[in-house]
Length: 235
Image (cartoon, rainbow, N blue to C red):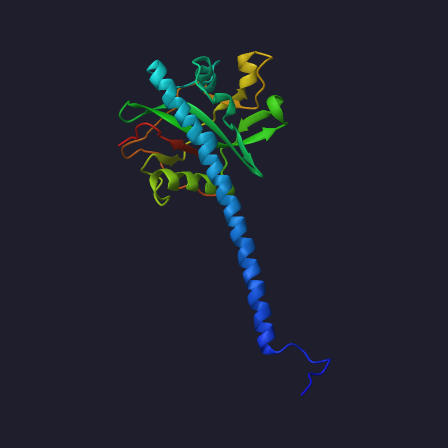
């Protein structure tokens, strides 16, 4: 018997269509996940791990871990020491609305007095473009920024369920580094770079051990600082 020209879809045909639509949606969502994971991996690779490798090379060469002063940043010191790749560090890291600044410094534990080399990571606001841009630490964490922080902690520590232990930790104390263009520090017209140097006008000092430790879990809208103890972690 012939099917009427005005007949609708059969249940089987509708089911097939729904399955196809479901597969397309799943593929799109999976593709978005893969893109986001690639972005987060890029963040871990450059600037974070690239800064870590450069810092360890600087230590091997000078016997000191890199840190800034009121006038000279850590990246510039590493550049002066001939450390390769410093000019290619993606600082600040910018992807869509996520803007993260990276600073190499040392931080002192108020409890024990011990000093640890750290990579300080904080959300930043970037105004303008290129070497003339202004980079300002905001310290206010968005869901996207927390996603990058969680990805880094999972890669380094194996999971992101506990921010009070491991090499990657989050403290509630805002630590606001300053940023300036490496090109401006180098004062060499032959060098062109959009890389920014993070530095401090003081030596950060917070309670890293004991009952007064400042660790907490990052939540959207709160202020705080991500610390990556890349050489030795507090106990």
